[in-house]
Image (cartoon, rainbow, N blue to C red; front, side, top):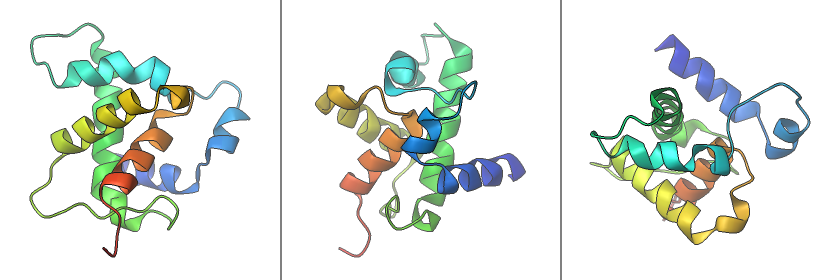
Length: 121
């Protein structure tokens, strides 16, 4: 739980511009993580277990802390939604926005979930 809280805090203060200016820091872009995120949904495929775990952990952290993110990143998941649904939403967003795949995966995930589940509607 402590790890998830640290990841959420990191996501709350991190911006795409800061990511691009931080040498040596690897979170993974949409390009880096796309296949691994797809493979998370396929129990039979363990092509890159490390990246699959990274993707799953990022989605879980973002999903569980979505309502607590800064307003420009915040989303409100509906009752009964789960992390696999959140992952499917993100993958659909990546497929629909290939020009954004160079962005960090956590930016793409929060954009996708915010578009799908905006707060206050």
